[in-house]
Length: 260
Image 1: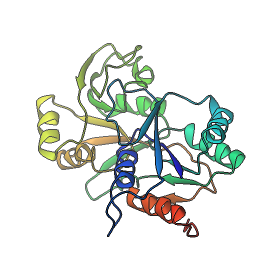
Image 2 (image 1 turned 180 degrees about the vertical axis):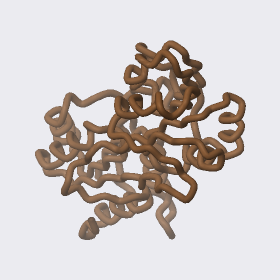
Image 3 (image 1 turned 180 degrees about the horizontal axis):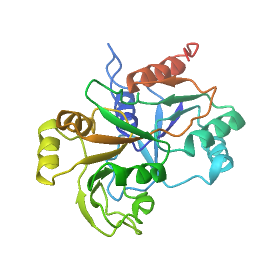
């Protein structure tokens, strides 16, 4: 059985690790299971999961459907980032075209808690429009590819954190911090204090790896601009945990009726 994981996330890597490990009570991975991990190639030094690796795009939904057929893929798992707005739709169309079962792994978004001062935005442009009324020292954690939405803001100072160096155009007053999560609450508290941050801008990525920044902002009483997630295709079975996806794969390989 051939499983294609559309990945690049913690969940995708964990799923690949689970499929490479022995199932409960077993002596090793189920025989005959082939796992291919697909990465978009946007990060220069990705953390590579176990299994075969493919880097780069497919050429849209039609290209992905052709790849599924050519490589005899039996199951497709979309474990891409919550803000990968295009690939979930391509995966849904390709799976339907190639008649390959599809499961999406989507981590839950963050929930507003007591003490949170959230300002929701539907896009990076909307987030940028909110900033002049909120503060002057911005901790921007929305990734390196969307800085053009903030490039026209000449007055605020930005601390931009990303895995790789950001792409131009960028805000004129900016410091770049190259770092990769998971982050700690103590570390985020110190970062906000040291840089005198008065506003946090984040995507609603969810998950534990980057959640401490939200908790640190809550403790400090800082406003947080939260960019909402893009829409996803309907009709696709969804689980929240890679363990659920691993169970789906193993049950399919064992010939059981798929639970999702």
